[in-house]
Image (cartoon, rainbow, N blue to C red; front, side, top):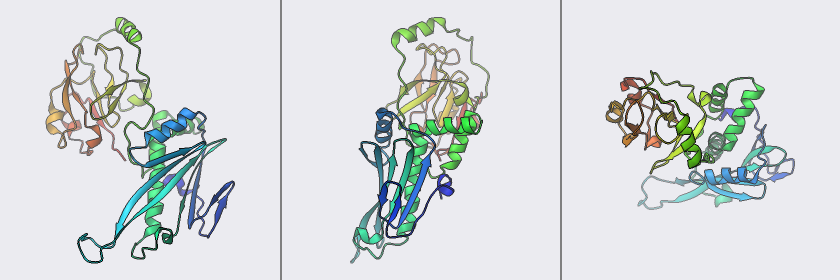
Amino acid sequence: MSLLLKDRVYSMEAPTAKRGVYPLHGYKLGLYRLPIKLEEPAELKSVHDGLKKAFEMDMYADRIYATYRWKEQNMDDVDAKGYEEVELSVTVEIVTGEVVDIIYQIFPIEKFGDPNWVKDYRKKADHFAKMVIDTILRNTILADKMISYLAKTEKISEVAAIQKLEELTPLAKIVLGAKPKPVEAKEDDAEEDDENIEIPDGAKPGPIDVDYKSKMKPSAVYEAPEHTIKTWGRKGTSNGIMGVWGEFVSVDYDICIADGGCIEACPVGVYEWFDTPGNPASDKKPLMSKEPDCIFCLACEGVCPPQAIKIFEQK
Protein backbone atom coordinates (compact mmCIF):
# COMPACT_ATOMS: atom_id res chain seq x y z
CA MET A 1 0.00 0.00 0.00
CA SER A 2 1.20 3.50 -0.71
CA LEU A 3 2.50 5.00 2.51
CA LEU A 4 1.13 8.34 1.40
CA LEU A 5 -2.40 6.99 1.70
CA LYS A 6 -1.85 4.86 4.78
CA ASP A 7 -3.23 7.29 7.34
CA ARG A 8 -5.20 9.70 5.18
CA VAL A 9 -7.28 7.48 2.93
CA TYR A 10 -10.99 6.94 3.46
CA SER A 11 -12.20 3.60 2.16
CA MET A 12 -15.91 2.98 1.87
CA GLU A 13 -17.53 -0.25 0.82
CA ALA A 14 -21.02 0.90 -0.06
CA PRO A 15 -23.19 1.25 -3.18
CA THR A 16 -22.80 5.02 -2.96
CA ALA A 17 -19.88 6.84 -1.39
CA LYS A 18 -20.01 10.61 -0.98
CA ARG A 19 -17.55 13.13 0.33
CA GLY A 20 -18.21 16.84 0.22
CA VAL A 21 -19.34 17.90 -3.23
CA TYR A 22 -18.01 14.82 -5.00
CA PRO A 23 -20.75 12.23 -5.69
CA LEU A 24 -18.67 9.14 -6.30
CA HIS A 25 -20.46 5.89 -7.00
CA GLY A 26 -18.30 2.84 -6.61
CA TYR A 27 -17.20 -0.08 -4.48
CA LYS A 28 -14.35 1.82 -2.86
CA LEU A 29 -13.34 5.46 -2.55
CA GLY A 30 -9.82 6.62 -1.81
CA LEU A 31 -9.07 10.25 -0.97
CA TYR A 32 -5.97 12.20 -0.03
CA ARG A 33 -6.05 15.93 0.67
CA LEU A 34 -2.76 17.59 -0.17
CA PRO A 35 -1.44 20.45 1.99
CA ILE A 36 -0.56 22.48 -1.13
CA LYS A 37 -2.29 24.38 -3.93
CA LEU A 38 -2.30 24.46 -7.71
CA GLU A 39 -3.14 28.07 -8.39
CA GLU A 40 -2.14 28.82 -11.97
CA PRO A 41 -3.67 27.33 -15.14
CA ALA A 42 -0.13 26.72 -16.37
CA GLU A 43 0.52 24.51 -13.35
CA LEU A 44 -2.52 22.37 -14.09
CA LYS A 45 -1.52 22.12 -17.73
CA SER A 46 2.01 21.06 -16.78
CA VAL A 47 0.63 18.16 -14.72
CA HIS A 48 -1.68 17.15 -17.57
CA ASP A 49 0.93 17.42 -20.32
CA GLY A 50 3.81 15.99 -18.29
CA LEU A 51 2.13 12.63 -17.70
CA LYS A 52 0.81 11.97 -21.20
CA LYS A 53 3.55 9.41 -21.79
CA ALA A 54 2.55 7.44 -18.71
CA PHE A 55 -1.25 7.63 -18.52
CA GLU A 56 -4.34 8.60 -20.48
CA MET A 57 -4.84 12.22 -19.42
CA ASP A 58 -7.88 14.51 -19.53
CA MET A 59 -8.46 17.97 -18.08
CA TYR A 60 -11.68 19.89 -17.49
CA ALA A 61 -11.63 23.34 -15.87
CA ASP A 62 -10.37 22.77 -12.31
CA ARG A 63 -9.64 19.04 -12.45
CA ILE A 64 -7.34 16.56 -14.12
CA TYR A 65 -8.00 12.88 -14.78
CA ALA A 66 -5.27 10.24 -15.09
CA THR A 67 -6.44 6.83 -16.32
CA TYR A 68 -4.38 3.65 -16.19
CA ARG A 69 -5.50 0.73 -18.35
CA TRP A 70 -4.52 -2.92 -18.22
CA LYS A 71 -5.65 -6.17 -19.82
CA GLU A 72 -6.71 -9.46 -18.26
CA GLN A 73 -6.77 -12.81 -20.07
CA ASN A 74 -8.61 -15.95 -19.04
CA MET A 75 -5.75 -18.16 -20.30
CA ASP A 76 -2.15 -17.78 -21.49
CA ASP A 77 -2.59 -19.25 -24.95
CA VAL A 78 -4.18 -16.60 -27.15
CA ASP A 79 -4.91 -19.21 -29.83
CA ALA A 80 -6.67 -21.64 -27.50
CA LYS A 81 -10.39 -22.26 -27.83
CA GLY A 82 -12.41 -20.10 -25.47
CA TYR A 83 -9.67 -17.48 -25.04
CA GLU A 84 -10.98 -14.12 -23.81
CA GLU A 85 -9.44 -10.84 -22.83
CA VAL A 86 -10.84 -7.65 -21.33
CA GLU A 87 -9.44 -4.16 -20.90
CA LEU A 88 -9.89 -2.71 -17.42
CA SER A 89 -9.05 0.72 -16.06
CA VAL A 90 -8.90 2.89 -12.98
CA THR A 91 -8.99 6.70 -12.97
CA VAL A 92 -7.41 9.10 -10.49
CA GLU A 93 -8.85 12.61 -10.27
CA ILE A 94 -6.93 15.70 -9.17
CA VAL A 95 -9.38 18.38 -8.01
CA THR A 96 -8.01 21.88 -7.50
CA GLY A 97 -9.34 24.98 -5.80
CA GLU A 98 -8.81 26.15 -2.23
CA VAL A 99 -7.13 22.78 -1.67
CA VAL A 100 -5.90 19.94 -3.86
CA ASP A 101 -7.68 16.61 -3.48
CA ILE A 102 -6.55 13.42 -5.17
CA ILE A 103 -9.34 10.86 -5.29
CA TYR A 104 -10.14 7.56 -6.94
CA GLN A 105 -12.93 5.04 -6.99
CA ILE A 106 -13.15 1.37 -7.79
CA PHE A 107 -16.26 0.21 -9.59
CA PRO A 108 -17.68 -3.31 -9.36
CA ILE A 109 -16.27 -5.59 -12.02
CA GLU A 110 -19.80 -5.93 -13.41
CA LYS A 111 -19.46 -2.43 -14.82
CA PHE A 112 -17.14 -3.86 -17.44
CA GLY A 113 -19.48 -6.58 -18.68
CA ASP A 114 -19.16 -9.13 -15.88
CA PRO A 115 -16.04 -11.09 -16.98
CA ASN A 116 -16.40 -13.49 -14.05
CA TRP A 117 -13.05 -15.16 -14.78
CA VAL A 118 -11.11 -12.01 -13.77
CA LYS A 119 -9.23 -12.62 -10.50
CA ASP A 120 -8.33 -10.09 -7.80
CA TYR A 121 -9.83 -7.19 -9.76
CA ARG A 122 -10.42 -4.90 -6.76
CA LYS A 123 -6.98 -5.57 -5.30
CA LYS A 124 -5.28 -4.83 -8.61
CA ALA A 125 -7.36 -1.71 -9.28
CA ASP A 126 -6.59 -0.39 -5.80
CA HIS A 127 -2.85 -1.01 -6.32
CA PHE A 128 -2.84 0.65 -9.74
CA ALA A 129 -4.72 3.70 -8.41
CA LYS A 130 -2.11 4.19 -5.70
CA MET A 131 0.66 3.72 -8.26
CA VAL A 132 -0.88 6.52 -10.35
CA ILE A 133 -1.09 8.82 -7.31
CA ASP A 134 2.51 8.13 -6.29
CA THR A 135 3.67 8.73 -9.85
CA ILE A 136 1.83 12.06 -10.00
CA LEU A 137 3.37 13.20 -6.73
CA ARG A 138 6.92 12.26 -7.71
CA ASN A 139 7.09 13.53 -11.28
CA THR A 140 5.09 16.75 -11.59
CA ILE A 141 5.17 20.25 -10.15
CA LEU A 142 3.29 18.76 -7.19
CA ALA A 143 6.58 17.13 -6.17
CA ASP A 144 8.30 20.52 -5.85
CA LYS A 145 5.39 21.88 -3.84
CA MET A 146 5.33 18.85 -1.54
CA ILE A 147 9.10 19.06 -0.97
CA SER A 148 8.84 22.76 -0.08
CA TYR A 149 5.93 22.03 2.27
CA LEU A 150 7.74 19.18 4.03
CA ALA A 151 10.94 21.19 4.41
CA LYS A 152 9.09 24.15 5.88
CA THR A 153 6.62 22.40 8.20
CA GLU A 154 8.96 19.70 9.48
CA LYS A 155 12.00 22.01 9.52
CA ILE A 156 14.18 19.65 7.56
CA SER A 157 16.60 20.13 4.67
CA GLU A 158 15.48 19.91 1.07
CA VAL A 159 17.43 16.67 0.70
CA ALA A 160 15.61 15.17 3.70
CA ALA A 161 12.29 16.40 2.29
CA ILE A 162 13.03 14.72 -1.05
CA GLN A 163 13.87 11.50 0.75
CA LYS A 164 10.66 11.70 2.77
CA LEU A 165 8.59 12.20 -0.37
CA GLU A 166 10.28 9.18 -1.94
CA GLU A 167 9.42 7.13 1.14
CA LEU A 168 5.80 8.31 0.96
CA THR A 169 5.48 7.33 -2.70
CA PRO A 170 7.06 3.87 -3.04
CA LEU A 171 4.86 2.84 -5.98
CA ALA A 172 5.90 5.77 -8.17
CA LYS A 173 7.13 5.23 -11.70
CA ILE A 174 9.73 7.66 -13.04
CA VAL A 175 8.48 9.78 -15.94
CA LEU A 176 11.35 11.76 -17.42
CA GLY A 177 10.53 15.27 -18.56
CA ALA A 178 7.22 15.45 -16.69
CA LYS A 179 8.00 18.75 -14.95
CA PRO A 180 8.03 22.11 -16.73
CA LYS A 181 11.41 22.60 -18.36
CA PRO A 182 13.73 25.26 -16.92
CA VAL A 183 13.97 28.41 -19.00
CA GLU A 184 17.09 28.35 -21.11
CA ALA A 185 19.55 31.17 -20.42
CA LYS A 186 19.56 33.90 -23.04
CA GLU A 187 22.64 34.00 -25.25
CA ASP A 188 23.61 37.49 -24.04
CA ASP A 189 23.36 36.42 -20.41
CA ALA A 190 25.32 33.22 -21.09
CA GLU A 191 28.14 35.16 -22.77
CA GLU A 192 28.30 37.61 -19.90
CA ASP A 193 28.45 34.75 -17.43
CA ASP A 194 31.32 33.16 -19.38
CA GLU A 195 33.37 36.35 -19.15
CA ASN A 196 33.01 36.46 -15.37
CA ILE A 197 33.62 32.77 -14.68
CA GLU A 198 36.87 31.87 -12.96
CA ILE A 199 37.94 28.66 -14.70
CA PRO A 200 39.88 26.14 -12.55
CA ASP A 201 43.28 24.87 -13.71
CA GLY A 202 42.22 21.23 -13.87
CA ALA A 203 39.75 18.68 -12.57
CA LYS A 204 38.39 19.37 -9.12
CA PRO A 205 38.90 16.57 -6.57
CA GLY A 206 36.25 13.90 -6.09
CA PRO A 207 34.08 12.39 -4.95
CA ILE A 208 30.83 13.83 -6.25
CA ASP A 209 28.78 15.63 -3.60
CA VAL A 210 25.66 13.45 -3.27
CA ASP A 211 23.73 16.46 -1.94
CA TYR A 212 24.32 18.48 -5.10
CA LYS A 213 20.56 18.94 -5.75
CA SER A 214 20.24 21.02 -2.58
CA LYS A 215 23.56 22.81 -2.89
CA MET A 216 23.59 23.67 -6.59
CA LYS A 217 21.05 25.65 -8.55
CA PRO A 218 19.23 23.90 -11.41
CA SER A 219 20.70 25.09 -14.72
CA ALA A 220 19.87 24.87 -18.41
CA VAL A 221 18.88 21.40 -19.56
CA TYR A 222 20.69 19.48 -22.28
CA GLU A 223 18.47 18.14 -25.04
CA ALA A 224 19.85 14.71 -25.88
CA PRO A 225 18.20 12.87 -28.80
CA GLU A 226 16.64 10.29 -26.47
CA HIS A 227 15.49 12.54 -23.63
CA THR A 228 16.10 15.77 -21.74
CA ILE A 229 19.06 15.66 -19.32
CA LYS A 230 18.82 17.89 -16.27
CA THR A 231 21.85 19.79 -14.99
CA TRP A 232 22.88 21.55 -11.80
CA GLY A 233 25.60 24.18 -11.36
CA ARG A 234 26.30 24.57 -15.06
CA LYS A 235 27.72 28.03 -15.88
CA GLY A 236 27.90 29.69 -19.26
CA THR A 237 28.29 27.89 -22.58
CA SER A 238 32.06 27.36 -22.84
CA ASN A 239 32.16 24.16 -20.72
CA GLY A 240 34.48 25.90 -18.26
CA ILE A 241 32.26 24.85 -15.35
CA MET A 242 29.79 22.14 -16.29
CA GLY A 243 28.42 21.11 -12.90
CA VAL A 244 26.48 17.89 -12.39
CA TRP A 245 24.48 16.30 -15.20
CA GLY A 246 21.78 13.63 -14.85
CA GLU A 247 18.96 13.28 -12.35
CA PHE A 248 19.35 9.53 -11.73
CA VAL A 249 22.63 8.75 -13.48
CA SER A 250 24.51 11.73 -12.05
CA VAL A 251 28.03 12.69 -13.11
CA ASP A 252 29.99 15.71 -11.87
CA TYR A 253 31.63 16.72 -15.12
CA ASP A 254 34.13 19.00 -13.36
CA ILE A 255 35.53 15.91 -11.60
CA CYS A 256 35.20 13.50 -14.56
CA ILE A 257 38.52 12.86 -16.34
CA ALA A 258 36.94 10.81 -19.17
CA ASP A 259 38.88 7.57 -18.68
CA GLY A 260 35.95 5.67 -20.26
CA GLY A 261 35.57 3.07 -17.52
CA CYS A 262 31.88 3.81 -17.04
CA ILE A 263 31.15 3.33 -20.74
CA GLU A 264 32.87 -0.06 -20.76
CA ALA A 265 31.34 -1.20 -17.45
CA CYS A 266 27.70 -0.34 -18.14
CA PRO A 267 25.83 -3.52 -19.20
CA VAL A 268 22.94 -1.63 -20.79
CA GLY A 269 24.82 1.09 -22.70
CA VAL A 270 23.63 4.12 -20.75
CA TYR A 271 26.66 6.24 -21.71
CA GLU A 272 28.17 7.47 -24.97
CA TRP A 273 30.95 9.95 -25.69
CA PHE A 274 30.25 13.60 -26.46
CA ASP A 275 32.63 16.52 -26.89
CA THR A 276 33.13 19.17 -24.20
CA PRO A 277 35.92 21.42 -25.50
CA GLY A 278 37.08 23.96 -22.95
CA ASN A 279 36.48 21.88 -19.83
CA PRO A 280 39.69 21.82 -17.76
CA ALA A 281 39.09 18.25 -16.56
CA SER A 282 38.68 16.71 -20.03
CA ASP A 283 37.53 17.71 -23.51
CA LYS A 284 35.01 14.89 -23.78
CA LYS A 285 32.55 13.32 -21.37
CA PRO A 286 30.41 10.17 -21.05
CA LEU A 287 26.90 11.45 -21.75
CA MET A 288 24.10 9.57 -19.97
CA SER A 289 22.09 9.59 -23.19
CA LYS A 290 20.08 6.49 -22.22
CA GLU A 291 19.60 7.47 -18.57
CA PRO A 292 16.12 5.87 -18.30
CA ASP A 293 17.65 2.46 -19.15
CA CYS A 294 19.82 2.39 -15.99
CA ILE A 295 19.32 -0.86 -14.02
CA PHE A 296 20.98 0.39 -10.81
CA CYS A 297 23.85 -2.14 -10.96
CA LEU A 298 26.34 0.54 -9.76
CA ALA A 299 29.05 -0.84 -12.07
CA CYS A 300 29.94 2.64 -13.32
CA GLU A 301 30.19 3.99 -9.78
CA GLY A 302 32.67 1.29 -8.86
CA VAL A 303 35.07 1.81 -11.77
CA CYS A 304 35.21 5.63 -11.81
CA PRO A 305 38.74 6.61 -10.63
CA PRO A 306 37.85 10.12 -9.36
CA GLN A 307 34.44 8.96 -8.01
CA ALA A 308 32.54 11.43 -10.15
CA ILE A 309 29.40 9.26 -10.48
CA LYS A 310 26.38 8.74 -8.23
CA ILE A 311 23.47 6.49 -9.21
CA PHE A 312 20.07 7.15 -7.66
CA GLU A 313 17.60 4.27 -7.89
CA GLN A 314 14.46 4.98 -9.91
CA LYS A 315 11.82 3.72 -7.50
